[in-house]
Image (cartoon, rainbow, N blue to C red; front, side, top):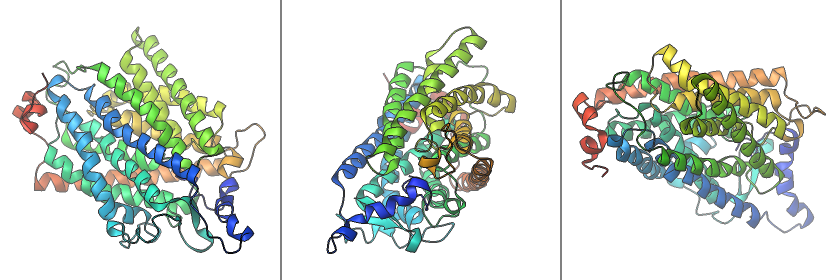
Length: 447
């Protein structure tokens, strides 16, 4: 949503004026909801929710062993239910309450005040910095809820096969409110300090992917390696599930990125186009890198490459043109392949399903390359006739935003994990892990 919340930059600077132009022409008319924009945002919201259930649920479940498939499906499904309520109770208020530079406020707890303007456009911020929307706030709340849901669900992939369900539930609530929501406020609310800094994050490179990837990495380090890693067969049981899940993620990502335009228009169209191109380019890069280094192109490599490209284009989607999108995809495919293979082996951590290797690494790649390739008329940076108009100053702003998110999330996640570990324990016993989480945690078995 960074472009919908852009602060007096380029074409996005015209958004409030354009949305409120009606009253200037018709003196007694009030701003009205645009049905086309609303319809697109409703569709996008459904697409993003589909990314978690069933998309991410199947993607992750297809990459674990048979004895953990149901438990892995349960993690995504239950988080979708749990975090929907948490978002209504406090998440939305912390992320999008007016607040200050670092934190929202508690004025919108339980979505207080939403009934009064349920069918009217709304705005965030105040004064000259206010940004108006042509959709009802209910639609904005629901769209942002889907981001709130999927982010911790992505991080869980790094801890597959070994985290206690009770620990996951408690951690997800704390992390979503104390880590995700503040970062969302920093980046996407007009009052946020990263917003004021001028960092570009169209649909969640920092807020979603770096956030989730770093949390996954810290969790993997704190929990330790899976029992039997390196001596037992950890091969995915059902890659067909993973392919179906990755396909749903790919399609759903159009809602994730193009929906972040906040309206149905040219920016949404560009975001959709570059999303497809980056995903395709990253798939090719990962597959050919694997083919060259390992001798065979794998199905797992292809779907991982697609996700890597989708992750990397997320912060840039509404700010770059097609050729840069392909470059971002190619770089992401190679970076993701390195992050999911060499990096974790060199460093010795057990990122089970490559949450950091793909989301963390490629989120960083995408955020930084946004500063390199941002196109002036789309991003508010200085235009370049070649369509590649990033600058060193914008790149350094991106570096600052990435570093701040990385450090805050790493420290905050570590503290929360340690608190949960002291209270209820994080990891299942070795016996439960060997038996499988389906039976030991849920009393069920697949087949």
